[in-house]
Amino acid sequence: SSLFSAVPLAPRDPILGVTEAYNADTRPTKVNLGVGVYYDENGKLPLLECVRTAEDQLNALHAPRGYLPIDGIALYDQAVQKLLFGAQSPVITGKRAITAEALGGTGGLKIGADLLRRFTPEGTTVYISNPSWENHRAIFEGAGFEVQTYPYYDAATHGVDFDGLLKCLKEARPGSIFVLHACCHNPTGVDLSPEQWTQVLAALQAAGHVPFLDIAYQGFGDGIEEDGAVIRAFAATSLPFFVSSSFSKSFSLYGERVGALTVVLSDADEAARVLSQLKRVIRCNYSNPPTHGAQVVQRVLNDDTLRRQWESELGAMRVRIKAMRKALVAGLAAAGIDRDFSFIERQRGMFSYSGLTADQVEALKVDHGIYAVSSGRICVAALNDKNVETVARAIASVLA
Ligand code: PMP
Image (tube, rainbow, N blue to C red; front, side, top):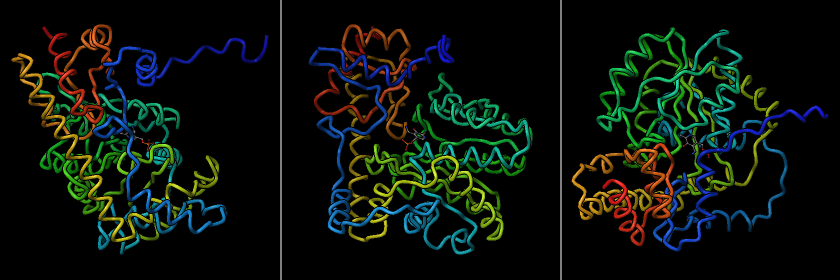
């Protein structure tokens, strides 16, 4: 027997499993609402025009591929900060923020988690929302933290259990780490209101907790500026905090792994020391980040014309998703469902917690070839004018 003869088979990723089952389905009317990507009105993954142009420009340069600095492309890191805080922000001019390019939002979370583990006391707990993106737990547990959940989604109201959340913020041991979705909560689509954010921020400050904001869908909620408002509210305080950025969705650059970790510290001196430690963390994870995706994003963000094009293309994605929310709600009503589904229109971003039970999701799959996550999460961006009525009728029939 070998060292590995007793290794157990790891459980399958529940979301990737949905797509495998979908691919194996031969029904022509099948629809995959289980995905976590934006599809266009033809059900295709878009290549943004701004990305195509930036790539053409880059190709023409035939640039050699040296190693990047450990923290990545400087122009990219600066562009990330401007996007998060606004170019004139005191955290930028006061050099209180540090940013390192990372391998997607996941990479930003991972190096942030490793850094925090080195400088927080043994036994520090990380709180993630209930429910959250599954990888939050895995990343922070993998970094050596104990992970607990804070109350978040309230199925009865399709809203936030805000009292539960505040209570948890107040009762958690001071100095705990709170992972918060800055906008377009995955998987529920339910965000805090600006007033609720103000209270959360005050509670975090009062307890000296460490906020870790995850922003993976900026521009998919109400707009690029609007969706970044939470980050700027945090930056207006003196509280140190972490931000992981992902451009996978907002640039449709999933496979290029473009993200970043930004940490806002108390002053420039502290920031320089923390950056030096973050570089050590990166060095022993993957040494330095890849070139292409960050070069594309940097070009787009730093060029006026490409930047406007990106804003308009991202705006079109946002508008299409909202139209699909509306069409789904209308389709359900037209199919004779009197249950109130208007909450789907109030949700933000790519996802909707539809309220469907695991049994109803199963029936959708078996009877209609419509695939969703067993939690009832559907990807609204996978709907289009051609499939939304079919989906609405199928949902109506499993609810009947
Ligand atoms: N955070 C959240 C909330 C996400 O939904 C995702 C992607 N599904 C990520 C982080 C990771 O993004 P990336 O693919 O850029 O690693």
